[in-house]
Image 1 (cartoon, rainbow, N blue to C red):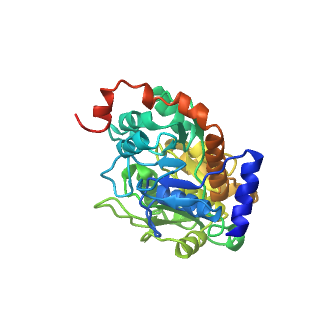
Image 2 (tube, one colour; image 1 turned 60 degrees about the vertical axis):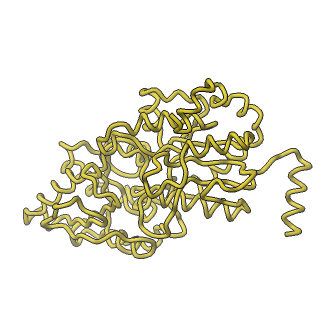
Image 3 (cartoon, helix red, strand yellow; image 1 turned 45 degrees about the horizontal axis):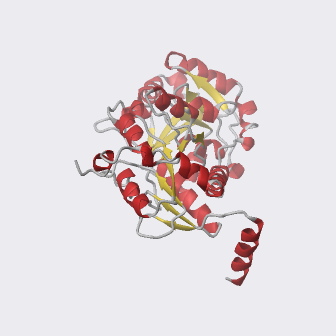
Length: 360
């Protein structure tokens, strides 16, 4: 404690302000529960390791940064929303707000999610998008917040590391794998189904195999694919590393973590040219469009060793992601006055607050 006080005193004398308390608006689980849960759990543990107090509610005074992660309060992962944040800011006006956006209607062909994200963004002092693709999408639909940045999701390299990756020796089938928590069809099942059907052919089955880890759409089943229930931690690592190539055909993915986990385990990526996947995966595998899937699979198999040699430098790690958030938080509290002067919330008419707070 004495050492920490000395460090804080040294920081104060240098004029640099550091963050002490962060509220993350997510109910997190220490098991398999999707990419957002994994990314935010990594951020929480990183902040704690840096001496930052982390909360998941707004019942604390003097919070430096509130991180809005899910404005849809009816979802289990949502710990608080934009209305809760607004109530807090009416009492604690100096607290700064970051809105992390990792969702869109296009991901599951829903309606209203994008506009809900845009409406809830009014309380944010800075907006973080998990991909450039997502930023461009929402900006084209009306999200105009000037203070924004892109911080890509990253996975934990203390868990996902390539040291145990086993090279394909071309003496058996090239083993493909993917994993998803969500069972939604747009997670890639059009391609996964096609691959499963290709495996009906004996000559194709001699060259390739496919393993699916996760939840399946209701009523759907594979014929030739090994299916495993969702895995977490070391069990997930072992299941993925029993294979050679990571396949993702997820459509309109805002910024998933599944491709990061496969890549950090050493598997080259065969990925659909959709959503965030090109910016996350470029240079670490082969992109494809649906009609070229089989051709691009063969291309990756032909150049397999070359792709494997690149995987050690895959950049989307949890450490990088967390450092970018911490740097952003520190920059914000050191420019607090500028952010507060720019705050759009206080520029709304008084009558708007009744709607904002759900009173009308």
